[in-house]
Length: 140
Image (cartoon, rainbow, N blue to C red):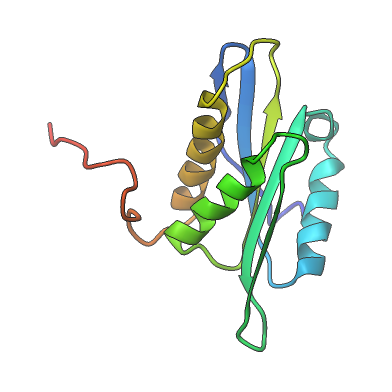
């Protein structure tokens, strides 16, 4: 699994660090295997929170999705919502947060979704910008 897991660039805000990891998955069992492979990395295993969300289509065509906050209240649900609105399929995303000692308030959710969205986009899981996805950039 380690060869299939891709990690994004870390984002640091007020001493807290956020980093997204993703892998293609096609069953709930594979989600657990990806999580176990990530936990073999001691740095990831020691993160304050490893927030998980996955969304996949089963062989019978049903949509299967779930999330885990790992102690970061409501973060898993927000991450799963991101996967839903961008239409990402057959992917598991884990965002690791290393708490830096300063409360970030709602900014932490922005950072969790930001690192996840960047990695999803760079790996081709987002076809185009999702509706309401941050506005248009001005040409220079």
